[in-house]
Image 1 (cartoon, helix red, strand yellow):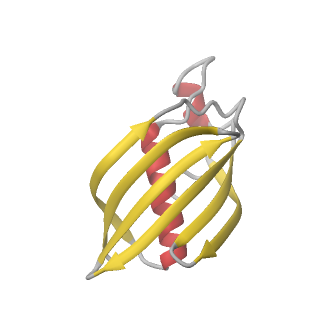
Image 2 (cartoon, rainbow, N blue to C red):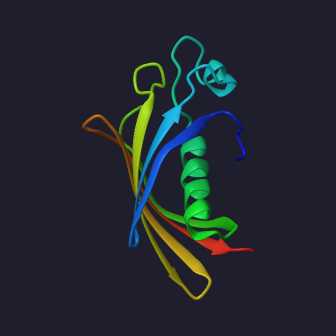
Length: 122
């Protein structure tokens, strides 16, 4: 985990190419004190890193983000109000490339839609 203590995985269920993960954000983490003071918001780069780490966990491979073709931040994630987030990750592999489509949400709110490509580095 690149940013230790930012989140814990509550559940991770694989169904073929679909992965359903529930993550608990740690609202007391230092990253939220700087982004932003008195109005914490989950940084987008941290979301991308979380998706990468979950994909690495599922595939058992070390990955490098090579292309993000579609990244839409649709709602803010405030860890004080939305401690639990759900990630739906579709993973496909072809010729050393991992393609990921993700929808991240809390309650009934979609916070992020993402399509990205990772290169396998180990």
